[in-house]
Image: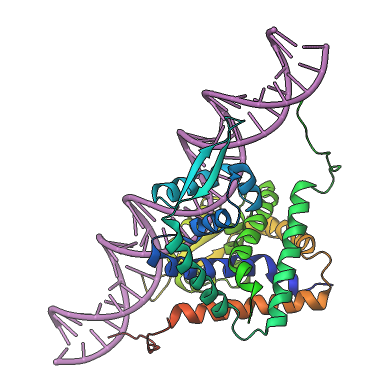
Length: 159
Length: 159
DNA sequence: TGGATATAATAAGCTAGCTTATTAATTCCG
DNA sequence: CGGAATTAATAAGCTAGCTTATTATATCCA
């Protein structure tokens, strides 16, 4: 039995997230950016040319949530939307030069925050922790897509 | 070096939290409550008579955030505020009878959600995972209270 | 070919976080 | 005692999530 684990996993995650967000937002505010916007910027850095829907899916968020964050990143001149050449519904996202110095600073900040958060946990354990979090993510993603009691649906297609 | 861990901890936590919140909120909506309100209700169940400030501190949230959640729990008749007898600034929180059946259902739901999330992780590993998350919480709480570069301040007192 | 359906992005309005400021009550101490 | 400082709770207004609905464009198939 998971007994005592029942008591805590759901709410511990929420409390931890609240603390980490507060801490990261406070640090990132020095550079005029929030943690949520930073996450988007980091994804665009890693994979330029993504569609908004693709990015939203990768970040486990709804497209409308992403739209607002992108609005702010564009307002600050860090990224830009470019229309897709063959599908006029689609925007693709690219870095602008102004983002470069910021990205350098954020890279160092990410290391600092991670080191602070994981202090006292040895590298092997930290690695396993991350892997377990990814595993939990996968479990929850599956549960959302295939709710218990409903048969798993096939991939939807046009038509 | 933590190398690859740098890449992922901060944002993985955010993505996991988003997924779990979406999942838990969808489940809890069947009972007319949100996950955030549920967390407050569960704390009050465990420790009746808490002051709002004490509860906010335990939940790692700001008092004003808690005020709003309590408003809704009171509106629904699940808890009530009672003035402290010796300090008229203070509200203390108590369950109302109407919360009992709800709490029973939520208890089962919590087990289900935890089981879903931690599927495939054996109990010993799940236990260690929880302990590590608590440890990370402690690290971040300390970092917020004693920012690097500033000397740790003594406990503040009246006067 | 053209209507039904699907998709991409966004708008409106909600919850839940936050910071900063306000009000009422309490405590400290000169 | 009485003023200064502190604390408890809340208000106002922001960010970032969400659901539901809208608009424009693209695809499928009869």
